[in-house]
Length: 132
Image 1 (cartoon, rainbow, N blue to C red):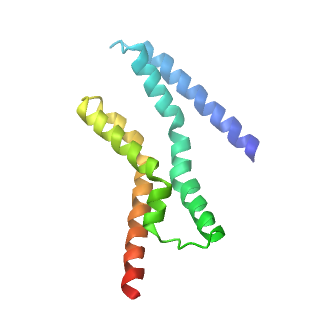
Image 2 (cartoon, rainbow, N blue to C red; image 1 turned 45 degrees about the vertical axis):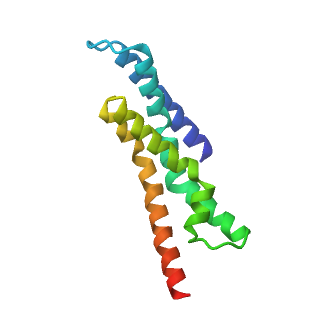
């Protein structure tokens, strides 16, 4: 199964290189660095989806079970993964302040799942504190 995913991801990287080459040959003549930036963002998007939807929540759950911690402790979750919450916000601010193409905001979609998980953990933590 691991070989299948390696082949699939190699195909995806090939597609990203093709997008880079095609974007350089477009009529509006984008800059080289803009094209390489878009192609690299496109290349890491599947990994971001895997990281945000599967790896981080499951790793946190395993870590909590191993260290005998509360799974719904959102303060601990935020402390452990604060960089994954700060970088998307910095990217959003830079896109908006530098007036870059708003389609770049689509690359923030995987990180919305992490914010949903943080909100869910915050609600569960508050309910646990109210119950006593």
